[in-house]
Structures are given as structure tokens and as C-alpha cells.
Length: 196
Image 1 (tube, rainbow, N blue to C red):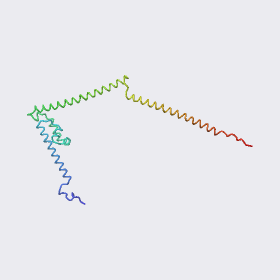
Image 2: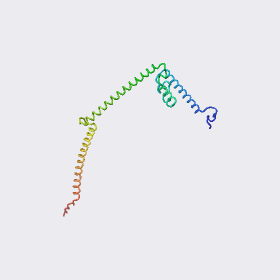
Image 3: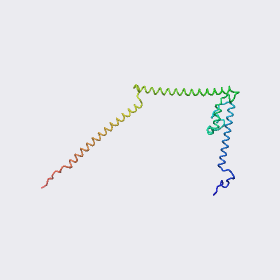
Image 4: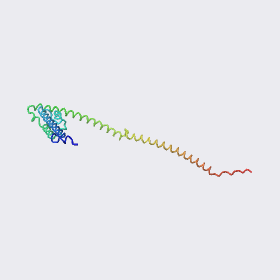
């Protein structure tokens, strides 16, 4: 049975063509949004990054990465000195960017200080444990655990040896009783007295 697309071939675009055209229109719309966002950021003197352009254009950053020409435009605009972008507001743009950079550097510095402090504390603990172990002031936890395990195993071996000795005594007694029984069974019966 022929499908409806076969009967209307050549008269109307297929569903696949319609979807492809809709996708192209959507991509063009988003590209226009990126260009408008870039122009707006250039006009206001705000910091230009892939994230800021994507946020202002209301598109995902991956959209910029999938379109190398757009990404190149954003990177070129970000690398352009503020004086070339806005000669009239050079002082305010550079002051704003310096303040933002200063704030970012302070936060990075604080994170690095905390990280260094944590690493120094951990290093101090490790060195202290090593010194205590080498000097005999402290017992390594792994050695203490192994010592307890050895003691437990030694006690288990002693218990098993005692049980084995008991079983050996019982076996010896059973063998002795067996020998006596066999001896009594193998002795000839005493002759019967005949009654005259």
C-alpha cells in the first residue's frame, strides 16, 4: 500500500525536509542572538567571555563550540584591548576589569592558602607518625593488628592441639579395648566336662 508521502512526492516537502528547515531557522536565530549579545557587551564594556556571551544570547556554551566562526569572533573581541573597543570610556572599562580581576585573584589566593594549610597539616601528621614508629614511641596500627591476629591464631592452634590429644587418647583406649576383645574371642573355649 503506497504511503501518503509517495503520493504527494513533488507536491509538498517531506517531514524530514520540514524538520531540516526548522532546524536551520533555529540555528540562524541563535546565531543572530549571539551577534546581538556580542555587540551589546562591546557597547557596555562588560567582560567578554564565551560564558558571558552565551548567557546574554540565551544559548548554551556548546552552541558556540559547535560553531567555530562564532567562537573565533568572541575570542577576538575578548582579546581586543578596551581602548580599541571604546575609546571614550577607556578609564571606566579598565577600572572595572581591574577590580573584577583583583577580586578573582583574592579568592584564588584564599583557596590556595587553605589548600597549602591543609597539605602542611597532613604532612605534619604523616611525619609525626613516621618518627614515632622509627623511635619506638608508638606502635604502628598495622603491626598491632597483626600482633593481635598472631596471638589469636596461636590460641586457636593450642586449642586444636588439645582437642587432637584428647581424640588420640580416646583412639588409644578404643584400640586397647578392641585388642582385648579380639584376644578373648580368639582364645579356645575350655573343654566341657562330660557327665558320666
